[in-house]
Image (cartoon, rainbow, N blue to C red; front, top):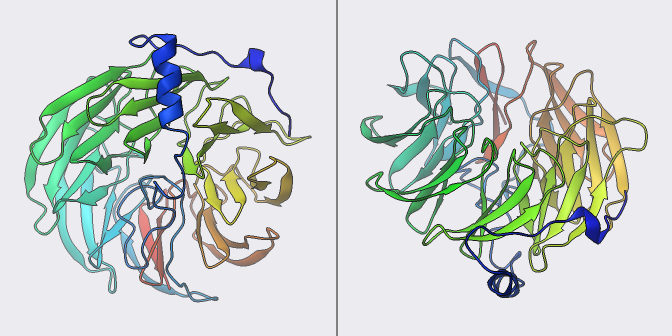
Length: 388
């Protein structure tokens, strides 16, 4: 862990003067647990990372030694992480389909063909307003009836979509490789605003206090007001950032391609600490989990890292056999995460000790979703697994 000097940071806003930027930060100083939902409810996981703050935490109770309840063969790689709502699992596949399955049985409810020529990659569904939203690698955001799978509307961007949609204040927000973050009317798909960055928008925005925060591939940490698309925060992240941020207690936590995990204060714009493993220097593609004072994140160094959320000091590491691009989820003091080695792991949150594993036989880059005592994750050989 090392603290960053003031010279490492840069502040700018293309639309606001310095006084306005500082005032905006002052208004956001109280952002944190009271503003963002810290844990998903026990019966739902309605978007990537479970909550609008992307904390990755569920309040569900999962059996200590889960068993495989069912599996579903989708045909091609599942890099998309599942959403769960009203007893239904929604997930995208490389076949270009969004599928809906019964959470209890794994029975197929419907299929929606998003793209005939390109698949659904890492974009994970979001569920709300009776709709399911997902982006595809052709650059199109789809809104589909959650009950029937009928297309309601689509919106085409000019680059592939790997970001996951987020719902807030009647808007659905999505990043695109055309360099924009888009804010659309969730009901109609009408464009409300778009914000330009200087590179791809790969990360999914985390929402708190009416602002959507995301790290960009332009090495900048952005904050965009949801109501009108005004960029109120633009701070150097120090490096290319593909991972999404977890927002908790007024801070953002995210990994970078400069081999660091960063804690950034939303009230001041200061980088509070930066963690880097003392021996192994590899990028972080996984998105962070924040729970009970611990930040957990997977690394391309084949490790899962447990970091003290306040100090940035290492608490523990767990070594897998391949890089860890899957993002961790937590419930009941346990961490759930996949690895490129094909294994799905359960780790103890306090110690990092391995408590359980399941070998799927294919790399896991998707992230787990937790609801109703069950955990769902997809693999790169196109199989969706449900444990409970």
